Image (tube, rainbow, N blue to C red; front, side, top):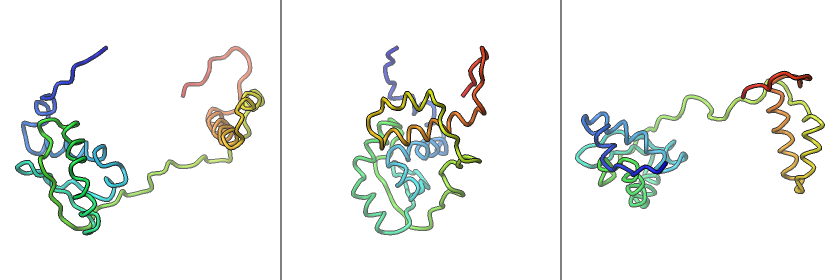
Length: 157
């Protein structure tokens, strides 16, 4: 189904109160700058069309200043009328995420993939792709315990 984009939707949903507009801009910031820059910055305020962003040092401030036009364009695409017309920067400590972002590894070493999967994987001509495929398949299938025989249902993901 094709939907026409309503440019005023963000304004109707988030524009009534300044703290709602700031919450929207904080939410779309990682999409505008990418995950790496989002981790190195913090959106701190929005006032009179200027989005204030905290950066850890002047080097990051200069980097973001050079990128301001594409950033503002992506913010405009996401926030519509509520997008800032300018970026302002302050330097200071940027809080880092509390823990590692990487998902935890498996509790036990993965078993070998079942014979049927190993046979099917032989159709992958590149061994550098086949080997990680088999490792991932083994980890995935290990989540469900030993293979079941008979006419039971398949496990849900």
